[in-house]
Image (cartoon, rainbow, N blue to C red; front, side, top):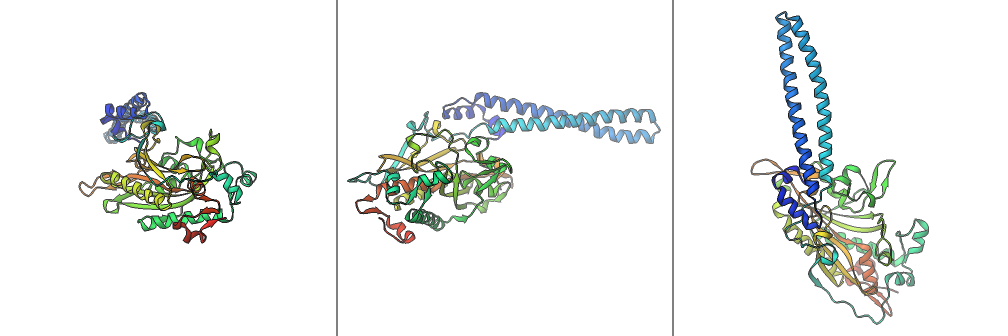
Length: 423
């Protein structure tokens, strides 16, 4: 969330930068400024009323001492009126603060200067690519391979729960477990501390990382307890540091977590949701970093390079995309997407997003650090990335490594799977 000072001190620049998102936020900005002016006016009136009340309390005591009973009683009546006025002004002030927070929460993050202009994913910028697209004699989609080798059962998942909740079986289940172990071990070797977080979060956590109110309709909500199923481990892991004041020497803070993820994917339908392409429940390993503001873009590049090593080790053809303003997530200042090529579908599948949120999440989280120089508390920067999301990785591995003799397992996974082929 942007701070009101960010907006007030750089109004024209903020409006201009937000326009890169292919939407005009001028009304939102003006509403925030107007509500802040209203808040300041009420605060000033309240301060003046409290000052009068305090001054009058002293005068009443003196009047009684001097025997001026009538004047003292009159002053007491005035004090009662001031107390009522203070209560009313306090209520108005709290309401104004809430209104301001609501307005600010509806304004997205300011895109980084390097974010390209554009309306949709068609305008995203290709950064680089790697790996070789396989030349297969026979191409098969992963849902057909899953059925042929009896490793993923979509119909059984539909029976037990519904569409988008597959059941992994035999070597399919072992492949899932192998990928999770591989991603976690790689993250640990890179310096990330492993976390095993809850799979449900409260409303404050959802707000802290920006899922609420922006993506409320996409989250599974347990209404009886007002808890939300996590859409990604980013939410509980980043919230570990909600309302925390760090020291500069604490940076960088690096955490990783495996979790099941839950997304309603409301409105998603058609061929792009078939098989593993888009699920309501899926597994993912996430990496999160809390960074000093001056180093967060170096950190972002390091995280992108790290995720790149993962797809390279899995021997998957990949490309790295910088998202344009129109495709940029609500909370992100800059995002790089990773896509892998899926031979059976002859298409690119997104498998990771690596983002710098700058201070946007930290402001919501009240995640700060104490500056060594002036001892002031400053908002930290937060970053996260998928490392990696399993469903489309599995889809690409099955389709790209299919042979007449079975589906080959990448060498890097074989120590985890304990087999080198699915047949």
